[in-house]
Amino acid sequence: MVDFTLTDEQKSLREMAHDFAAREIRPVAWEYDKDGTWPEEIIKKAWDVGLMNSHIPEEYGGAGASYLDGCLIEEELSWGCSGIQTSLGCNGLATAPLIAGGSDELKKEYLGRLTEAPLLASFCLTEPEAGSDVANMRTTAVKKGDKYVINGSKCFITNGSYANWYTVYAKTDKEAGHRGISAFVVPRDAGVVVDKKEDKLGQRASNTATVSFNDVEIPADHLIGEENHGFKLAMSTLDRTRPGVAAMATGIARAAFEFATDYSRERVTFGVPIAMHQAIQFIIADMATEIEAARLLTWKSAVMLDNGERNTLVSSHAKRFAADTAMKTATEAVQVYGGYGFIKEYPVEKLFRDAKIMQLYEGTSQIQRLVIARETLLPRRVQEPAAVPA
Ligand SMILES: Cc1cc2nc3c(=O)[nH]c(=O)nc-3n(C[C@H](O)[C@H](O)[C@H](O)COP(=O)(O)OP(=O)(O)OC[C@H]3O[C@@H](n4cnc5c(N)ncnc54)[C@H](O)[C@@H]3O)c2cc1C
Image (cartoon, rainbow, N blue to C red; front, side, top):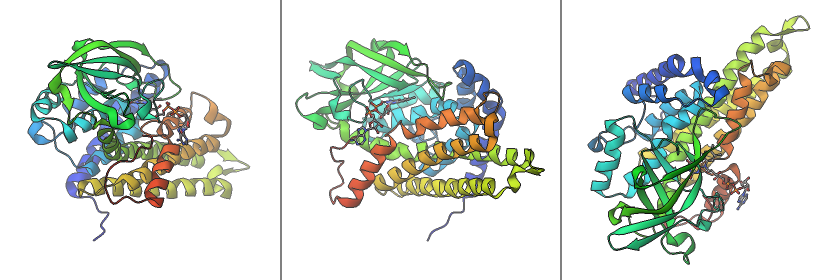
């Protein structure tokens, strides 16, 4: 049976997330964007009301929410400000490999830290020479007795300046390409160095940093799962987190659509509101259709996960389509505002800058198309990720 009706609990959750976004995020979003202000207070409040770490299983102190529930929260908070939501949601990305493959002790310790206090974790995959081409990473982890010694540098790490611990991907077999990557939990106090905070085009309230590991020693039991299985873990993590990114993109698109719709009713040209011009109506109509389609794909990709199904193809459909919809809708919103859309004083200028990142992080729109093409042309019987980019 196909049923798009949310349960009463899901409606309440969405309403709660929307109220939080309207009350705590929207009023400061444009101000925080201007100066790239770190949203520390908002993180604490979101943690207090249970809008962070909802995905962590109940046995480790989380809410054990479904992927669909997560998407409902992410769309609303991103409607408030996608930069702030990137900071709030990053624990989901960092913890996904640990939840999927970590030992019980590791989960108790590190998931417990996030549910006991408003702390953050980061996901460290990207390097200067390894973005889409993950297998080209240079960071190494060498086993010495009962420890691993990590050396290398990771760039563009969300919440990197503030994380209490990091999920770090490193080569444990330099000759084995993507089959030589392993994943580790690295506590900040093991000696992680934060090198640089990036100054960004959009999502300026989120923190993006370069972090380095210089002979950082961690206990051998901080390996997540098995040695050399890190690539598989990273790809299955992205299958799990792309629905949430698609939900965020839908939230940006919805915000741009609402601003454009309101403005089109107010702005008068040639004696009538611009909403009366068919050219503007068609822009609004296309926005509405594409946002609806983006949300349906997003929900489908999340529900598949909730049903325990492999969602690689659909999560790439959702992430690619929702990200491109966010960019297109924000661009068209600027068009509806005319010259005012280009001016910082008006809201859609920020949304236009924020939308761009949706086509870049967690796999660019090109990489999503590669996944979609591979899954379509070469459907695999064995459910193991192929050696294509992230
Ligand atoms: C604000 C921000 C936050 C981020 N947060 C994180 C984080 O928390 N953790 C993390 O690990 N990373 C993070 N990233 C990194 C992000 O995931 C990468 O930037 C992204 O995967 C692209 O990698 P790249 O920048 O090296 O681009 P490249 O891989 O160099 O790609 C450059 C261009 O070539 C295209 N391209 C590359 N290969 C192919 C191909 N085979 N076929 C067709 N086109 C191709 C790409 O689509 C892109 O258009 C973040 C990035 C930003 C900007």
